[in-house]
Image (cartoon, rainbow, N blue to C red; front, side, top):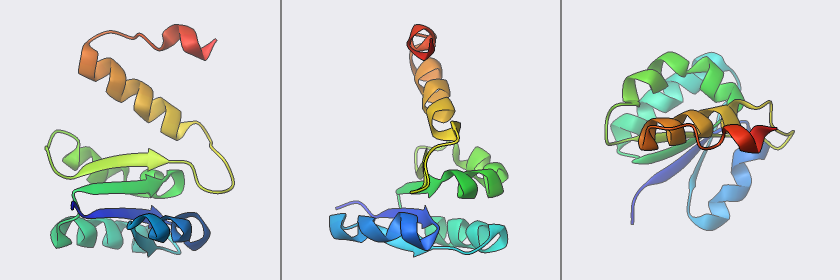
Length: 107
């Protein structure tokens, strides 16, 4: 089974342990950056991050974007979405198929 991790605030990541996902709680931006780098070095191939972690680690995540492993995906935290997760998925879908097929679904 692939190694999957979720990095974010404790309340957002804790529930994913029940699904076999490594919950890696962080308290601030610096800890988020350190945890992301450590997760990649440890061999996690799928890494979910909350929107806060995504903002704090955008430079590191950008470096991983063109690599086959790891896959880093942004998810909302338990307090709700600020739209970053949807925007990231929209961008990934558009890049993958070469067309913006989701443009009408945002209206």
